[in-house]
Length: 123
Image (cartoon, rainbow, N blue to C red; front, side, top):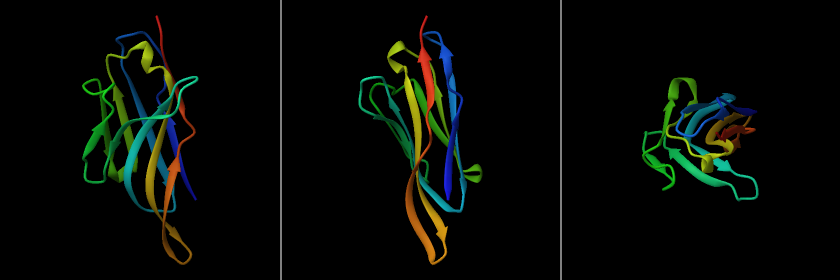
């Protein structure tokens, strides 16, 4: 069993910053790629940023230069530093991870998701 738990969301004004965290726990052998997605009301879930186990990153055009994804491998945790926030960044933010888990017969691969954390940017 694996859990992803997000934290750090909230209500901020335009131009402010927030830092989201997502910690993976459970029967983890290895965490591969980790990512942040977001879903605004009435819209499809979209990819915000990804980071590989080697530290390579990819960002959506809409957040490039404002958001930074990072990870702490020892803590199985991924972060999203969000600067210069805009009202259009308002959404529920979800983390996901590709995880190699320990099972009774050896190892298995799963894609795990967090429960989401609300980010609201409004004056």
